[in-house]
Image (tube, rainbow, N blue to C red; front, side, top):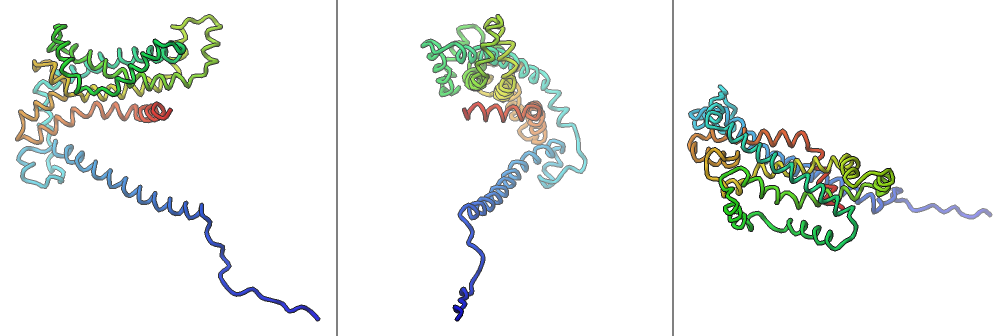
Length: 298
């Protein structure tokens, strides 16, 4: 006799989803939520920028008579001409002088200090110098403004652009040293040894090996410090007095007081003040983001 054939009970044949698959599904849903939140945040940020730009092209009467978010029917450049006629070019030149005069020495000093800290061995002096630079990151500008003011008075530099440049250099160095030293540590030691065997001096190794290989980091700290000094308000406010020594943030503050009712003129000055740093950010955006991410992740 043949054995009876048994049949499996009827039921679903599909296997249950594994744990990783369920996790991937949850992550996909989370990405949709994150994307929606990102677009919402972009909308929140872009609406004020849109309002500033379109209002700067409106007349004062048109601003009070129409919807604030409605584009102007007859755009005008009168607000920009009004701002330019009130010494805006002088304030722009002052800001450029302060940024260039502070960023170039700060980046050069930071680069040489970072090279010395990384390639100078493990001496106690270099460790103390490195710790001092790191401590500079913990000291805010607001906590030192009174000592800085007294030092500038003692040096007879008050009410000059040099009074803004010198403290800006000091406060730009700590972060620059941190970022540059992390990049120099990534340069293979064999390259330094091969240059030393070829007879290169420390200065030659610094400028012909470390400088080209750390160029992205140099661009990063240059853009970052340039943006910070360009937007600086406290140092020009405390250390200058004459109208011809104003930088753009301080001039924008004075425009707001002078044209407090003429809102389109104030916003035109905001647009003109923001354009240079916006262009600088667009040009060096990739180096800025990648350099900061690499510098703080090591």
